[in-house]
Each structure stands twice: as structure tokens, then as C-alpha cells.
Figure 1 (tube, rainbow, N blue to C red):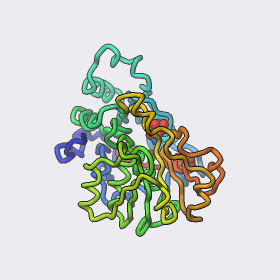
Figure 2 (cartoon, rainbow, N blue to C red; figure 1 turned 90 degrees about the vertical axis):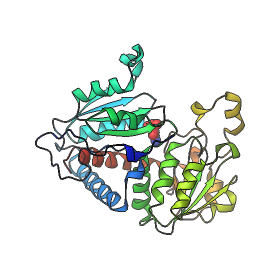
Figure 3 (cartoon, protein in one colour; figure 1 turned 180 degrees about the vertical axis):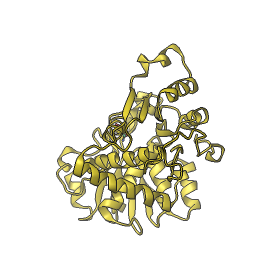
Length: 330
Ligand code: CP
């Protein structure tokens, strides 16, 4: 359950000398996509494009020299963890990596607030992935330094949604008028919760394709409905495939099921293969937050519409932009 963000401070009281304190997002937490408006997104995407260009031209540069990121991951991650690390290092900063909390004092029973208070003593910004929804907000209550939510259980994954939307904008231009179809595990897939919320800032149509037991949560659908965005639910992709501009596929999140038997009922239910792509629009893009298991066949990877590896790379530029912005350097 996501807590009400209105109770969370968005401006850190910690303001070190030498930072641009008038910079947008300076000292702010990134906890939920609900905190962004269209202007914010344009600003973040503008900085991300500059980051992309700088990486292309010089690889690394010293914008965040002397700054330290604490990368605190209580759940497994390849992309989010390594792209935040790469983002910080490409900006000249350094990283405290806690990817295996079993080797930290968490294994001795240390609480999240105490762990966060410890890490902020050694760093300038904390990136947190945690299995419980609301954990990033909890951490932000105790931290004076910015906290960035890198996925909180089945709650949100705001930096993923930002990179997802950035991918759509870079590949297809203005999202206005697009039909976005989300397919797979819409119940436990936090990336689709965040992306659906973020897309309400645009005039899009949303389709949700999932088995009955993995439907998009009512809480998310209610929020989308309040914004007047069209949304329809299906159990089969076929009725909406031909009209889809963005097909966003998600993995069935085995680790969130109460039992293996329940997971077995729905695993492997949807597979996007060359035959599916043959019935899709010529300019559709196929996205996936990754990791994928069997839901997209590898034969699709060479199709130019398969955007998931490009999507992953866009994540580096978005995370470089966010780190530079919350640290007052962009
Ligand atoms: N998309 C994503 O969050 O991937 P990781 O779990 O590898 O970080």
C-alpha cells in the first residue's frame, strides 16, 4: 500500500555549500511518479538527453566529483543497481554498494531507519530497493539526504517509469494519442503501476491484458480513471494487438506469489513471438522492464521494434539526470 505522499517532505533540510540550491529537484526525494508534472518530465528528459550526448562524446565527466551514492538493495537487481552505479561513476562520483544485505548489519536485525541514518552519514544520496511497499517513503522520513526509490515491493518503481516514458518519447515522439497496452503480471508488476500513473499526464489510451488473478489493482485504475484516461481490460492480446502503439510486456513475478501452485496457473500464459509481431503495427515498439523469462521469445530480439535493450540504455541517462538534479548540479 502506497502511503499518502502529502505527508512526506520533498525538500531535504540538508543543504551543503557549493551546490546549486535553486536547481530543480535539489535535495528532493524521488519516491513516486505522483510527484511529477509535465514540466518536471520535460526538464528531466532534457537533462537526460544532455547526459546521453556527453556519454557519447566523452564517456565520463566530473559533474559529481566528490559526491557519494549509497546503493542499498534488499532485493536482487541487475539493471537498476548497475545503472545507478554506472550513472554515478560516469559523473565522476563514487558508490557504496550494498547489494547483498546479508553481509551488512541488516542480517543482525538492524532496522531500515537505522541503516539509512548510517548510510547518509557516509554519502550524499541513497538509492533504495526494498521488498515492502512504502519502504522508500519510510526511509525518506528518517534521512536528511535525498532518497531515490529503486522499487518498493509491489508499490512503485518511479525511475523505471521515467525511463519507460523517456523511451516512448525518444522512439515515437509525443505520447499524445498513443495506445499503450500493458500485458502480463499487472497485479505485482510495480513498473506498470508507476507507468500507468505517469501516462495519465498525457492523452493516451491504456489497455490492460492479464489473467483474472493478475489484474491491474483497483487503486491504480481508480487513479487513472480520475484523470479521465481511457482504460480497458482484457484476458487476451488479440483484440487490441493491431491498434497498439506500445506493447509493454511484464514478467510474472514468481517471488510475489503466496504459493508455487498459484504461480503455475499463470506462468507462460503469454508469449510474444515472431507470429505476434507479424500482426502488430509496423511502427509499434515492444518494451519490457527486464528481466524476461519466457514472455518474449528470443527470436524477436532482432526485430527493430524490439525496444527493450534500448530502453535499458535510456535508463542510464535518466539516472544520471536524476542524480545530477537531486545533488544540485543540473
Ligand atoms: N527493470 C528492473 O528493475 O530490473 P532489475 O530488477 O534488474 O533492476
